[in-house]
Length: 207
Image 1 (cartoon, rainbow, N blue to C red):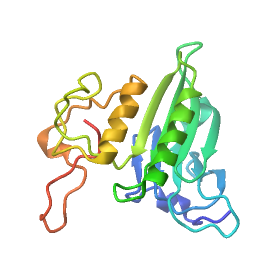
Image 2 (image 1 turned 45 degrees about the horizontal axis):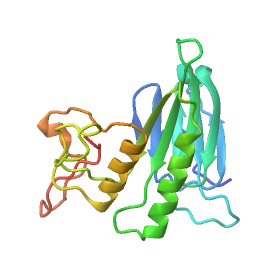
Image 3 (image 1 turned 135 degrees about the horizontal axis):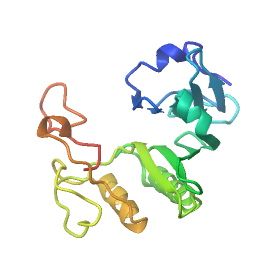
Image 4 (image 1 turned 120 degrees about the vertical axis):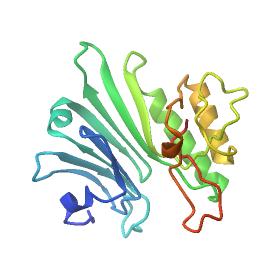
């Protein structure tokens, strides 16, 4: 297992995002899969390349608060781009499944994209239908503002035009009856802005 020793410091870096109960990390660069109790009482779950002498690329992680940690039932690593955790809720008989995904970028080859989305679909299909399933992460998908044909899964808060990866993601949502409707103020819609302002703002939060 190879990963940074200063995990607590890593938690405050920009590649770890989320609320106070569950934080998520993409592109952690950690290899192997495992978990670690942090000094704060939180628990770190991580998944990366598992082969011997694996490259320090990709990698995903979840950081659970003390409350979320006590509700944790099980978790699964799925190579370097997907990690899943199941947690108890206050509603008896219903659990929450959190899936953290880190999709290949738009310029990646189609085989890598197909492998990711096939794997993601397989993970989703194994989630109990009665449970609340939440898919989050860095999906590198720009769904744009045109929601024709995707009215059931898209709102009116996107930006720009849909990319090929955005098309893949909206189809995934449609197939699984999921949604990308997350209203934001205009100033909060863009999740990526060109440092030289030569490219249009992009929203990767799938609105």
